[in-house]
Length: 285
Image 1 (tube, rainbow, N blue to C red):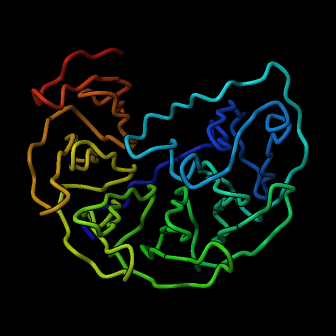
Image 2: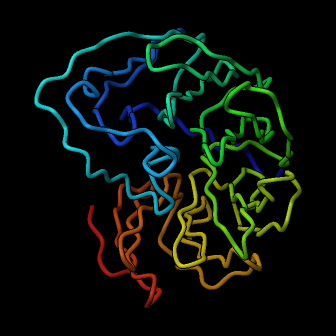
């Protein structure tokens, strides 16, 4: 570990359910209630399948947070589910299962009626959202442990260990028929992990903490670091393609649309970065 640990306060701003995005108030109580607005499903024609799951932070590998689902005019609370800590990340949904995480250290799998199917204790607080891929739940916690759990039973398939906390969600890519996960850590590294075995493939070292999730763009991981750079890393080789200096700490996650990456920083600056030209297109504060 290098330097002091940067404490990131990540409140819950949005609850997501299979593509729905609902603004939520910042929640600070020690025992939080996860509110699922299932009434929306009664007004929709959503078919739950692997193809249309909201199975990853912001809904897709580009982390753009967009859905084509029509949002109804009227919504209401159907049920709630309590945890013993803060819920700092959005849930993910696939099939008939909802997966949430909590700073109580547990991963919870619920059915669509709010009943607990299983829970798994990771032994430390969790701030990141989970990734569901091919029937497996992937999630990291604040001691740097990264888990793969069977979504049906909650049974652990494997565990990978980073050298410092994991605060951001994992993403994934398929290369030559194999699936790989990539996730950042406060150990300064972006880790590439074999999704099937949990074995490390490569590590790319940045110059400070990696707090947010990395987005996928044309075979590259796009992520900001607390070193003030936007990094573009080739996911097949783990090699740096480019890094673009922005400013100060970048704790959040970039959203990708076309060739543009959109990201904010700790100085309150919001930027659009042209990934093809590898330069800042515009900025706003």
